[in-house]
Image (cartoon, rainbow, N blue to C red; front, side):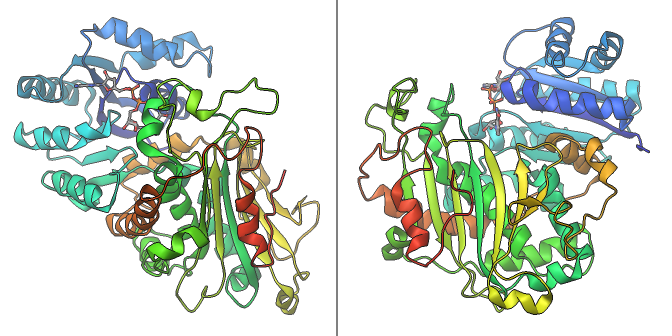
Length: 479
Ligand code: NAD
């Protein structure tokens, strides 16, 4: 049974892509489940001079693909209000404050506020500072949600964090990593705690290597401009891949609460084995896609808003090590790329022979399929774990739970409203992730790659396979 939650959401960037594709559908689904009912309102802000009615029309439009219940969409949209806003104009924050207070009273939201940054990262600091200087914070809860990217490097992340913490405490800041909202990533900890043998197997005595793959079949599409400033290292490794490694490698938490989980996760990030600049090329491979073999897919350098000589990477594979008792000696191979043969996010845990002493077949691989499969599953040596009848691995939930699976943004919205930070990135985790990634970035920025070096619709450059072969290993997912 859903418990109704109350808040005024202020969505900075209410006319943007993220708001329409992710935030409004997520809020609507929470409305349909009763997590949001009467006591909420949403203020969308953007530069354009829209009326409330026009804005509501765009909100309803964003729901057309997920529902045809026009009455419910209409009722839902009555909770939406528009405020035209330029991030640097103080008067606009004063108008926003007045509107938010009015809606607090009208919808009886308990003065709770969610400030959602769905705008360009360069505005995050400015908006937070104005929330402070124009006194928008209230005596209810005040939660600031920050989208990625959180900085472009360790230094810029520190700068951003100090500008945010002038207004919001660490406990009020929710750094989004939507992979942490995905069903299978969220289940991983519960599965570990529920299956004692599996939990006992997760260490360097039994695991030969761990592989994390976040593969996309699409290219950069219309986001070439953004991608030119990011590259896959910043876009996927620094955040999503690091967080997934945290979930696999952390020690057993004392409890299933935010504090206990972050305590053990923090240790994983702190034990990332330092990479020296001269070790980068031995341990990390980068790539950029060319055309496919028919010439029907464009090379990255021919995409819109991309420099025809761009050295931005669209593929990365690497080997990361952890320096702690549990995992030392076990490679964590990571890989992410665009224009790979299929969309697939997965974790493969590859066991060695010793695992037979736990009653698990030698050389077993356990795979967590994160997406695109809905209601994702676990494979044991490529076979659904239920069909293979695996004693050491059971799901904590009734299988019916799968059909009620929520989308990542819905899970995370509920967490924000509940004040639950389990699935958000904390500042100390982020710092260590940036320090690690900065070494690779700086080394790569000093060298000129030979791009493009993989064809679209392939598994990336050959060097990505060689990286594992030289350790006597191979990628489990290999088209
Ligand atoms: P977008 O360009 O589609 O939307 C940006 C919004 O900001 C628009 O509503 C625009 O009106 C508003 N805006 C721009 N300049 C402004 C100003 N000076 N004052 C006030 N408002 C202004 O961008 P998006 O794709 O929705 O991304 C928003 C944020 O979410 C970015 O930080 C992005 O990195 C992050 N993000 C987006 C996605 C996605 O799938 N789109 C995924 C992950 C993270």
